[in-house]
Length: 226
Length: 226
DNA sequence: CCAAAAGTGTTAGGAGTACACCCATGG
DNA sequence: CCATGGGTGTACTCCTAACACTTTTGG
Image (cartoon, protein in one colour):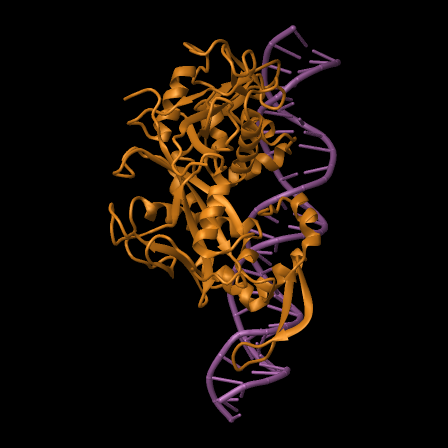
């Protein structure tokens, strides 16, 4: 056991998006050993002049082409045997893609990439199952005392869409009337003079997130993910 | 900017204890450059076979002699210029020392060590002020939805002591009757047939934390720090 | 008898939860 | 006319916050 170990530091990304009404996560199929053929979270080594968050944003842009999305450090995993190639400490981040930041996988450099349901997916390489579990737990917790939920939607959205975000992340159904009253009480939504329609039903009013209420809510202890 | 940077990984520790009725933190005066003479958080390099948490516990034992205390990973700081000696990524942890785990500094290997008030202390080396600020914020938040507060007290304590923990961490006064009612409602305290007395006043009944209630509270969403 | 901390209830307001029906539209 | 999601109000319970006086002890 040497005193100063040279360590590789990576960032791994749990990239969430709401697709087909369910919470999904971006996985990459490994083309080389170890765990060849297994699915894994996207990630990579940090570079010398680069902060951890910058590395995470670079990886995110490489995999999805998107920038300016919500990104938060999750946890750092450093068990000595977590990577058979050597000592690799990974700083995990999670990202939330909004509905309008077309989350299509462009030039993924690591074999095949695929969106899969966040709670139902193939076996993962390394300790990535643990990282994903942790991200799901954090996301659900944050939803209840911050406004991360909006980060999974486009700038304009209906109340039904917003409720489905909460239901997908929390994994349970919510009462429509109570949900809408709570949102109204927070006064963080601005109704717009636009209506949209999804299927064969009554058109729904579009809303947007009201940035003017940030301060007021922060004072009340409701934190913001910015 | 090379692709795979060799990085040193350290753990830094924010060690809290309640001393003289206030929240204090353990600092070490640096004996060598950089920041020679400045105060810093205790910490050190991880060793090759050692997990991050094991490294943190080892450092904690080296500085304080204590084991089996509450320890939680805080955040990982990795700005490329945070250490003038090179690329050092640090995984910060915070620890809570109970009142009876005599937090005397024994064989501190890095010059002088000292307890200082957590919110009023000398200028710190590196980015340690930021780490400490982050730890204070996390501790205050966790106090409100977990039972970390008990980790700062001995096994037997009075309700007054418990309230002073909360007040010291939250930085504000609490109403005695409301505080006691809330504790009674949670049913996590067991009154003992022992009374103690601090100054010239009525003796206070000792209580202990009731381990039997863990399950019940976890089911209700109140998390436990174990 | 004075100072100091322990101990003890009530009330009012706000938030959460449970619950059912009509509306606008497309097919 | 039917299926689909949009939109709306009330009653109950529980938690929170505000608020003051008596008790026990040491000096």
